Picture 1: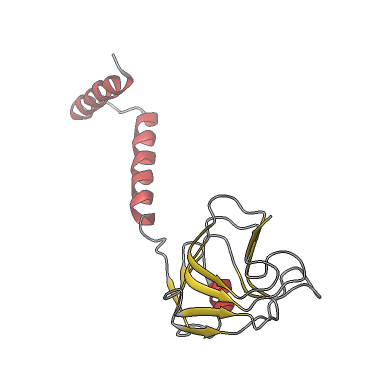
Picture 2: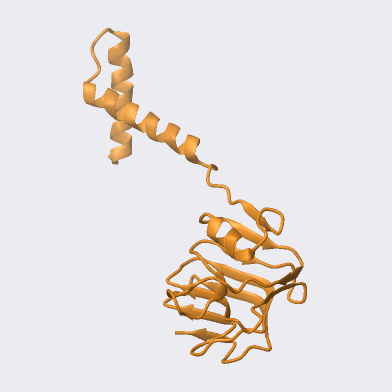
Length: 181
């Protein structure tokens, strides 16, 4: 007889024992209590991890500020416009700055490749992506970027296949567009 069948028979005998006034084994009560608590915990935690949408410039004026404030699963939604903020250190003092430094689990979503434009004004990279997972960059343009070494527009370094880029226009950048190392 299958294990589940034995438990059903045992449950039936426990119910019969309870009706006749005989005690039910303590381990059976503990097992049923733990099962009920597990179900309750699953019900209470399901649905609490809802992704937030962080709007630029509504919630944050700059794209990088919104990305850094985002939690895993959040979407940074960038309104149409041209964004100039290539001031963020990527690898310490003296390194090539970037307009946006991505975080794991965050989606950066523009409003269209000709509508949302990250313009680094030849001061550094557009987007810096290093040691992250499960992030997305989509539906925007990266332009006018510069780097002495490696990709100017978007640099992917030490990322896995969970990082994705879709519908991104790379335009007028010095020292390469997208580099993956």
